[in-house]
Length: 206
Image (cartoon, rainbow, N blue to C red; front, side):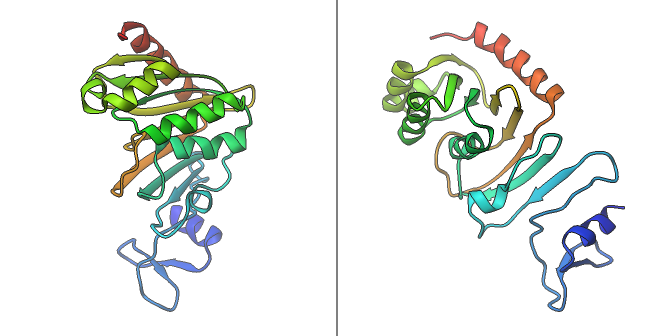
């Protein structure tokens, strides 16, 4: 089952009777950085390592593979998007965030100017206007945006070869706290999120 899959892909790990992943020969609990659950027809990767950089933690995405991850302030949602764009090549993006930093806006603007982002839309929470007036002014002057009552943090990235959904607790701001996210490469998940967010975008205000 999943135990066999863990041991075949990460041979230095063993699993005790409690289900904990132990490093062989040490008896210490160890974060699993690569686990695949292919037997159940749902290939997934699980990443949870506070010491790993974004590049090493997420690795190479594959169509049909779902990546589950934790981060400890290693990267925010926009940095994750920038990393994924290096793999997908030029693509469209649509995201939501409860908060935004000036640095994240600058990163997105750079990708737009470099034509790595073919288009970009964003939905932000209504309170960004008062909570972060300077970043909001930048966002308003830079992007096709809408404001609504939203707490969801979603990023969609797509082109002819990829349809990616990032579902996460991370915002577009740097935060040294533990965060949880999932990267889906399933077209049905992408289509569900795109349709829902496009409807919300139409209801939003400027």
